[in-house]
Length: 228
Image (cartoon, rainbow, N blue to C red; front, side, top):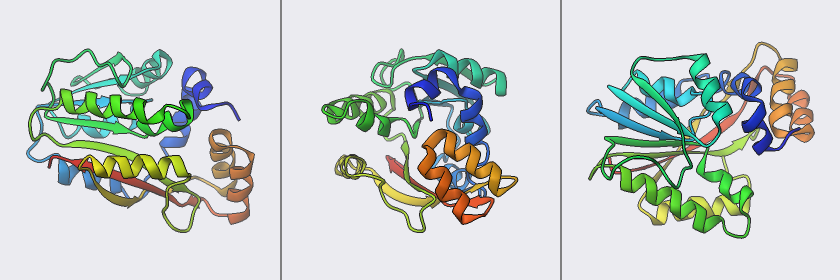
């Protein structure tokens, strides 16, 4: 199992293989359909990865500017799906090349939560900078959406560790409202599920998925929304 940093720097294809099988019930699309009304003229996305959420946004906004800190992931996003109303760029979550109030909606998918692992002794500062940057770029009253994990291959939703629990509490203290979504994976076979999830989450997860012997693997997502 490579580190998350290594995956994002070198294994975009394996990451795309993971995310393309998530959200069998289209819960993310339903959430975006509710929140992104009226249709936004411009959406800015942080941590776009290979463009899984970007593609959903492109169908629901006039223009999308999608950023990721990894040039490797941005290159993969362009190759997977190059939409005429999407522009990609490399940028850190805490320093976007955008003017104040530029967006009619801001979205960050499974990106800010990584600071709890990347910066275990200073994650609050890094998370605060990223959220403040999103609020700076959003026009007054525009929706700001944060997607974060609430558990993989778990029967019930819950923050996977104490730092993420504290991060989610910080979001809510900042006025974000949490909604838990069932975004379970569906793979072609149980063996495929174990292989793909094991690469991203490690041998323990691979064993857990194999023991379930199902092509459907539970995944829970928290959508934190402010400003709708």
